[in-house]
Image (cartoon, rainbow, N blue to C red; front, side, top):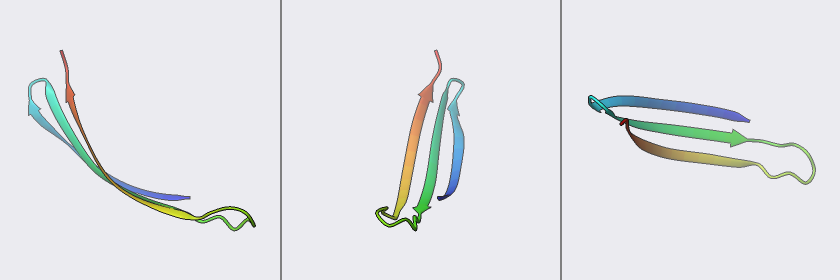
Length: 50
């Protein structure tokens, strides 16, 4: 399995952060009954501290 990830975090305020990222995963299996797959993802999160 091979995974490539890139992300960035931004401070929006004194207690608020936003994060954005990209991920690519590739899985190649050479066994007889296995399945290979690829995944491409975009993700985001918002964090608020109290």
